[in-house]
Amino acid sequence: MPKSTEFMELVQTNQGIIRKLVGLYADNEEQRKDLYQEILLQAWKGYPAFRGDAKFSTWLYRISLNTILTSQRKPNRIDYRESVEEALLTDESDPVKNENKRMLRQEVRRLPEIERAIVSLHFDGYSNPEIAEMMGISINNATVKLHRIKNQLIIQLQPQIS
Amino acid sequence: MKDLNKIWGQDDTQKDVLQEMLQNKSFTKGSLHSPLAKLKKNLFIHIIYAVVITLGYAFVIYYFSFWQVQACILLLIGFNFWAMSSAYRLYKNVDPDLTHDDVLTELKKHYFAFSDWQKQSMRVALFIYPFAGAGGFMLGGAIGSGKTPEAFMSDYRIMIALGITIVVLVPLAYWLSKWMYRVAFGTYIAQLKESIAELEREG
Image (cartoon, rainbow over all chains, first blue to last red; front, side):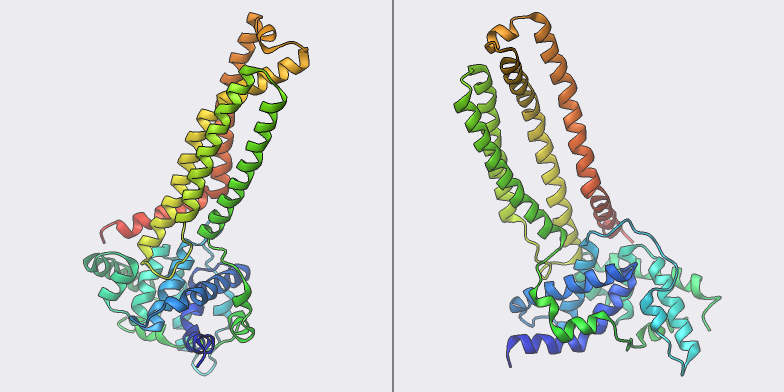
């Protein structure tokens, strides 16, 4: 299979990672588009060096985070309104689940950038050692940070989530 | 509240511009726009400008045979060569590839690339401005008055005017460049610094 076809298939399968992360950081449609473009291009150019030591999803996650956190964005205007992406998320079959998800996403979007990244990795199933490795911090630091962020989220969401 | 992971885990299925990009592979034709890629491009332009300006200086040295002006300009050329070589070294070392390192390393790589570049440029500029000011002053005075720089500068009032020009011009140019740098990269540097501090802060 040609490398490009293989790459496209892998990204297609894992596009949820990019979409979810960009949705947590982009403030508007233009920023979202720019980040998508940059992440895909970084991944495309870096793919020949991808040796498969890590899972593709982990590799893509790291590239997405690196791209987002080092991108030159306008001053962080915290927009508490739903993002366009989240507004489109209307799972009419289960409005309660959908509402819970929207509220969780909204609370995560209120967190500082680094905390957003850490908690997002955790929710996406990465272990504390994996989070520590991806972020470049100690396992202990990752564990403590995560514990604090989750507690904070629980306090914020406790009265709201059904 | 143990269900935060479960709530988060519900999959996103909506389509947006990402899907379009993947379908038509439009991203493969672009070039990187990451800040380091931009810095690299800026450095390249910086080098080109330095070459053009150095050629301009060489022309002035050749055309105006006032040794005082030539001495100032020779110093400027020397600084230009130094600036070009350091910009080239930085250009070679800047790697806009974000696929290898962890987040903290990448943030630091970007932060230091920009802040080191700024410090270096500002230091060089501080040395250059007085000579540039003096050279320009003497050349302009000599051409304007139709005298040689010795004759033009022999009046003590002109010497005072030169002193004032340098004293006013150097800090002004320094602060102007600092302000321009802050406008161009200040927010970005602050954002990187904040993220690095956040990561390094123990839990």
